[in-house]
Image (cartoon, rainbow, N blue to C red; front, side, top):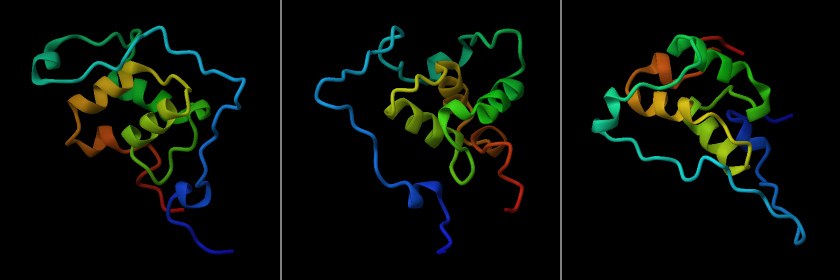
Length: 112
């Protein structure tokens, strides 16, 4: 078996809907763009700290595996597949895009 560095090396194909299937659009509308003005707007984390909220995102297997990719790449992949990941996660990741404590999943420091 060849060793793959990323999960996307193994799973290269994207599921496409059949001709009679239609993905429903999210009721949230388009993803808001993040800017410097948005940095002071509070994010509803449902009473959790930012780190706990991101940790729960990492542990939720509904959005696919998180090993080998950044949280933002995982969020974008889940969005592309119509899994509707939490918009709060994207907001947190764009606010702290230079901090590896926020951008990498909880398993990043573990050697497999």
